[in-house]
Length: 617
Image 1 (cartoon, rainbow, N blue to C red):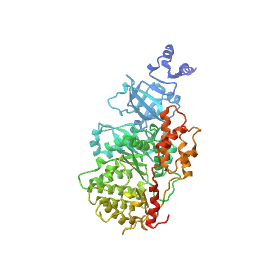
Image 2 (cartoon, rainbow, N blue to C red):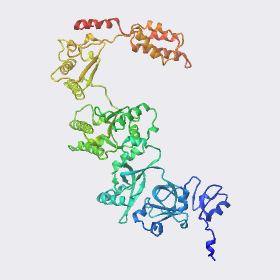
Image 3 (spheres, rainbow, N blue to C red):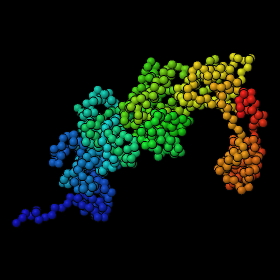
C-alpha cells in the first residue's frame, strides 16, 4: 500500500486570479477573492497584470544558507537578487537575467532609488519575498521600511571598457585619494559580471568604512564610431556590463560637475526654432567625428566651430544638447579659470584641458570654450593674452597632427564678433599696425580674400599739403602691403566704391587694383526679374501692371525696387489690416515716395575716372 502523501496532489504555492489577472500566493487567494480583488496593495507579494513583481518583504544577508547559491563566492552573491521560481517563470525571465529593483518607502511610497542585480530563482517555499546579500547603496534605510518592484532591464546591453564614477560624499575625496587604486580594484572585483546604468548607485565597504558612488557615464569597448551609435540609438536605457578588463575611473568634483551638467541639459527635441542651425552643426560634427559616409580624404577636416549670437539665444544649451545627442565627452574651458598670475601656468591650464580630450580617445569629445573673445581677443595689448592666444592656436593645430585628436571638435561661443579691422585710431602708429596685422592674418590663412568696402574712405587721393594725416599714412601702409617686399601669395584684394573719382591713382596702378568691374544699374529686363522675385511674397491684385512698374523705375537700384515693394505693402496695411491684396494705388503711392537716389552726375563719374586712369571700359 503506497504512502498517503503520494496519493495527494501537491498544492501550488502561487495562483492566478482569473478576475484581475493578479498572480499571488495561494494562501492569500481566498481573502483576495472575498474582498473582490480590493486588497492588492496589502498583499505581501504579487505579480500584477502588467508583468511587474511587487513585494513588501525584503530580506538582506545570509544568502549562503540557500542551497542554490551555496557554491557562489561572496562577491558573486553581492550581485544577486533571489526571487521565487514561480515568479521568475511568470515574468518570462530566466536565471542570469539582469533586473532592475526599484525601492520605495513603505510608509509614503517615496522613491529611494533603483539598483540592478542578476536574477537567481529559489524555491517557492521561501515565501513571496526578495533576497539580497547586501543592500548598502543607500544611507540610513532599513530593508524593513522598503517595498521592492522587480522588472526586467529593458535596454541595450554593452560591454563597458571604462566606467566613470563620482563620490556621493565629496568629503571622502581625500581619504579615497590615498588608497584610490586599491579601492577601485576592490569595487571592480565586487561588481564583476554585474550590469549598471547611468546614475546607478554603487557601494563598497572596506575596514568598516563605506564608500558610495554614482555612475557618471561609461565608454564601451565597441561602438565608439558614431555611425554605430546612431544605428543603435533608442529611447531605452543603455546598460553596461562590468568585465574583468573594465577600467574604473573616479572623476574629481570639477569633471563630474562638467559631465553631470551635460547629462541634465536639454536634448535636441527640447530646442525649437533652430532647425537650420542644428542641421548645419550636425553635418559639421558628423564629418569631424568621421561618421559621414560622403566624407573624402582630400584636405584636413575642420575641427573648429564658432557659435556667435547675443546673450540668451541658446548657444551653450545647443552645445550641451548636441553633446548629449552624440554621447560625447565634454571639456569646458572657462576663461576665468585659465588665467594665472604665475608665468606659464595659464598655458598649462589650457594644455590640461586638451590632454583630457586625448585621454578619452577614441570616444568622441567636444571642447567648449565659453566667451572665446576673452581668451583670444582681437586686441593683444598684454603679454599674457598674446601667449595664451598663441598657445591655444598651437593646441588647435595639434588636433590635426595628433591621431588622438581625430574625434575632437572645438566649439567656441561668443557674443562679440567684429567684421574686419577698425583701421583708423586716435593713437599714432595704431592705424598702420592694424593694416599690417590685417595682411599678416591674410597671409597666415591663405588662400584668402581681403575685402575693403567703401575703399574711397581710406584710399582717397593724396594732396601735397597734408602729408602727415592719418588717412595718408594708412594709405601709404596699404600700398606697401599690397605691393611691397612681402609677396601676397594666394591673397586676393577686392574693393568696392561708388566714387571711383576719389580713389588715389597709386591704388589703381597695375599689380594693385588693376581690374575694374563696373556694376551697372539694372536695366529693364533685370528690373522685371527683381519685381517678379519680390512680388512672390506679396499678394497683388490683377490691376497691378508689372510692365508699367518696370518703365517707371528706370534709374532705380535693386534696393530701391525692394523699398518700393515694401512701401506698397505697408500702405496697403495702413488702409486695412484685413486687406487681402495690394492694389495699384498702393504702388502709385510707393513710386511717389521712393525716388532714384543715384544722380546722373554720379553715373558719369565712372567713364571720367576710367579715362583719367587710362583704363578701358
